[in-house]
Length: 310
Length: 291
Image (tube, rainbow over all chains, first blue to last red; front, side, top):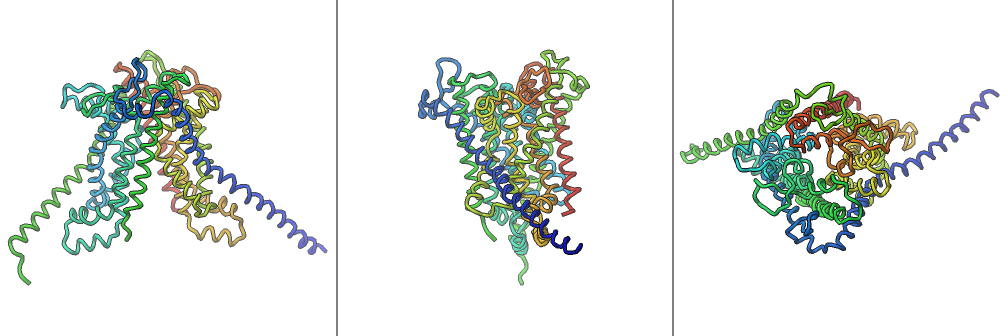
């Protein structure tokens, strides 16, 4: 009697438990899916807010004159809204950064991959990780207080705010990105290729330059593009060290203004919504977003399209 | 076989020399990174060390350099961190679990995945613009702590999702099989077997993402985190400030005394980041062998 009741009770309990778990197995995927969808909502939110306010702005300032105008003077009359000075400033900074970071980053990746003994790697890699984790405001301080005074000894007529110092420090900031992504790409090149070249009597440099680098080229180039995109979006270093003079110049010793530092400058004052100054934040932001977005897509495309499969 | 003739041995010599020279050049380039880091830390410590005092923790920001402190920025940064941590953890890990364990490999999932990696490359200032338009103005949350928390959560989510996905992917498949073989449902398997063994990796990723967030300045300037906050935020809708913003304010002043204060603030910020990074590495090393 006792036995039968317990046997009869067991299945009952089990069905109860199973229905409970079935419920959780239905609801939980939906909740988790909503978390994943949040990223899509974020993207839509970014595109929507940038477009919405930009459209209002472009009703007052024609798109064409925004894109081709060579004077940026949004606050002082006569107001002019030509984005080229900001774009030029951004590209000057980015150009300097890339000129600094690409050769050094690549040399660093080759050294770590082909030459460095394990103990040296063990020191250098964490240092590069630390460099990658330094907040950009700290780099900004470093540019203003250490790099600029140092460069002023070489170029005595250079002002406190200049593109060169900011550009070099932006280069330092993207250096770990180039070296670690390039190193990953080189690491993925099969050992047999290297051994084959060594067996033919190649030196380490020849192996690095003629075997490993071509085989890893897609990853290396995509790391350059990503670094380029990161340098374009960098804000605090240029805000602190490059000044706030929107002008079209190729002279790195002069003060310039980038798209990002303009956005910061405007939003530090309390800009009322609906004014044209408020609109410039979004129009410049949209330009910045489109450029970095295209570069990021380009980097992914390069990495995939030109990958050598072994 | 013939002996090597003179031309060949010369060429081999030349190749050897070029290999040696380039070795040196590569080594020099690599050491630039280390030298810059040393110069950076050296500059900051020399400028800021004598301003480090208990006053920094107890005084509010001030127009007078000798009285200025970091009390409200330090508290603001800690509040931001404590509020962001659970929110970004739940949302980020939730999304990662969905993508790794539930979603399969359909076209939509690949699109979400592409979207996440694209979001990770969006400049942080764009998130600031988003926060300004949606949270500060759109939802009328104002220039508040809550706006800051929500903006920064969106900023770190892509990083956390990618890190959590990697951690989940590293869990061996036979753990899942064993759990199913015992009759566990999908959610039981994920929550009681997969997630616990992926947790160290996830925690490391989350801490690193948060440490990036507390160093961010630009997005919080956009949503208007103030610099003269002479009180501590008491609820989510109070205005606030954080350490990087106060440091930025001090750097922008012409007076040398404020630059020294900025350097001392940077020392504190770097110490905080250093502790978080050590914690992340410690968790990774301590628990990574147990999988």
